[in-house]
Length: 287
Image (cartoon, rainbow, N blue to C red; front, top):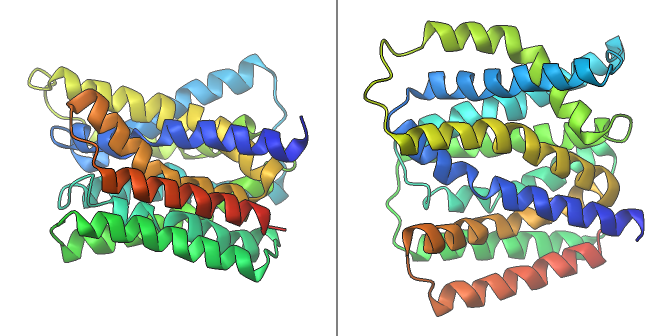
């Protein structure tokens, strides 16, 4: 199996893991303060990452790598989780699909700016079409707009796209798990202190679903998913593999159908097929 194919497989696994992030955040933020939730997920994942780095005796990053790791940390450890958590106080997780549909395009743009990639014009056509299909499908569901929530989600997508591209660039030097682990460790002192300062006076009223949401976003969304995602972006190309994120909303809806018994409509299946074709087209013309 060649390096590119391996990258697409790793990226696909990462997207499947990330598909549960917004629903889990939505459940958790109903009972946890958004700032506490953001700090707690980063602190828990950061503590685990530190243990992994120490256990495997990994060398510290050089000064030249620190700046890029800070960008990764600000983008995916702090920025996206915090902004999306605030946004999900104003909009539903379904409404956020509109913006997740823009994330592959944002990742591709930053892949050009930060990763030096130069996809063919046809790639951009498939990328824009795929994003439009996802956003159009979400809007067709009769979603209620919220200016505050929409602005926060748009900002979250921008910083996340930057964090993805920057982390993928570093993953050409380090392995994916090292990149996200060092980014988490860099933010650990601040996030741990913030978690303690925003900790609720009691956890007695927190229901199990909120705890499950916190565990999921801490372990899977914040750490395990990035191990596969950064490896996929580094091996298969930032812009190309980033298009797999177009499938994320539909995986999320599939989870909702499975766990919450929500109906899967023919329209959803039709758009999913169209999006898969866009992803295939983007892959073909990525280089």
